[in-house]
Picture 1 (cartoon, helix red, strand yellow):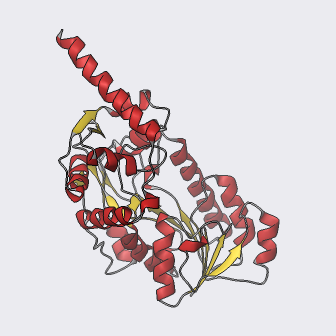
Picture 2 (picture 1 turned 180 degrees about the horizontal axis):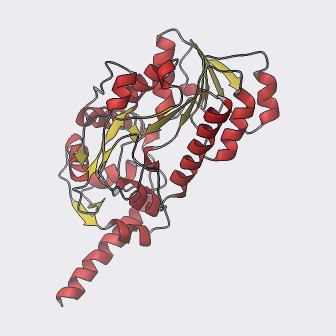
Picture 3 (picture 1 turned 90 degrees about the vertical axis):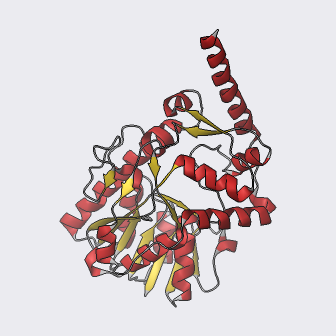
Length: 338
């Protein structure tokens, strides 16, 4: 198989890249070359900014691919560019959308690919929906061979998967735990959530590559394991060898008092209970099963981060914000009881 990835070094794509190269795929990576130390040996680098359409067109002239996958497109204009560049040059174009595009709030917590797409809380999700609509139009009217893939919360060894964290990553939450400080869990922590290790996601994605039955289809790829946010934070604390000191705060309050996009990331995503039905994926990719249990995956992630100090990025601003929010909650309780 001859494939081209736009991106190729992110949380999702890095695992796919690794598995494809191990299987002998002829893989091309198109990116700016800023994170190529993460690329396994054997990938062919096309170094360019995908936004420089003229330059990219020159570099891919004369090339054709079995699969082209865009991991970094977020707006319809970027897909319009991809269509101009790759129409007639690939047998399959794969777009990485997002499970956050599904109806929010849900009318049924069980999600299938037939669940409506609608998210009034998050512009990111609405842009992904618009991207999907553009590609479906090109498939129906021009025969452009698309496959739309919707990941949910996918993680790797470089960042601990969490609900509430700062703009500089998730390490500061782990550090608060290690320092015996309270950590914030949105809501009451009992809503249902699904996290997927990127190595499991890669197996499903590769099974869709070159798959004639996936053309024109939208498919989500997630684990079948469902946990609560309380369980997620308990797992993290257990791996760190500390006792969890959780403070539960409503998602609406967190969204209102933070400059971060908690309205989108929480109200438009993580605050909602979701359970994914992966029957469609399993029909398209017989034998697919996610094998990395969450406690095992998080243990591997934390061990990796503890062994790599460069991944332990401090976030003093987020740390101070947590203290301020928790103090405000304590003060409110005292005032009500007075």
